Image 1 (cartoon, helix red, strand yellow):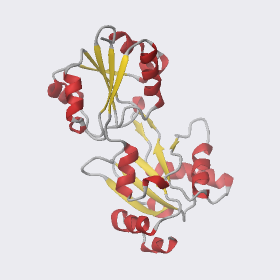
Image 2 (tube, rainbow, N blue to C red; image 1 turned 120 degrees about the vertical axis):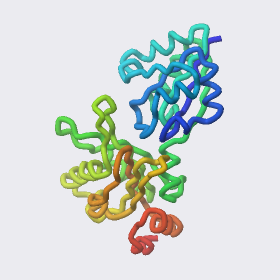
Image 3 (cartoon, rainbow, N blue to C red; image 1 turned 60 degrees about the vertical axis):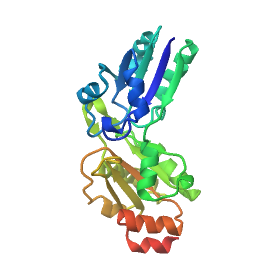
Length: 266
């Protein structure tokens, strides 16, 4: 029977795989993995192969997006294929597209979920999950294109009193991973032009680095101070809080070192 199983790796290394995930990989006829949609700080393909006793084929963005995942789909003919994805496997729209294509071909699909950056950041910050609005990616500035969409999403969420989770761009092939400092500077550049006081030096923000790793880092402060903070190695993410509940403010002070004056914002 043709089958494609999407497996979430988690956030840090191969040990984040669940027992169910390991069982699925061991029983697969073919195992693929993509490592370009997110950075797994300590993931090692060779260690994973030793753990599961299977060869793992790492596929590129080109194979998944330009070639529409044909290499993976072809291997499902009469067999079971496991597709490993950082975090939770269907957060990226590319993977949803692959699942739809498989189902249209008559290939049965299943999902083994993994830890997600979304739930990890919410948990680390202590902010309430139902108070997050639309998330957005802050892109690298290429060809002088400014991140207007990111700025607008933060503004719209704030108008509704909601928090904004900002993913920070990465280009795996070039080994470029946007930092908290870079993301803030890009949004400040938009602020200089728009002048709507969405992201200023006095805006409260939260930087998160290496969520899911033993050496994670989280810091809440005003933008001018976050620009001076050393978050260390990637991956990084940003959160712009909206209207704070008093417990959220307490969490940011206790868990993320926020200035105590934010307690007055509730």
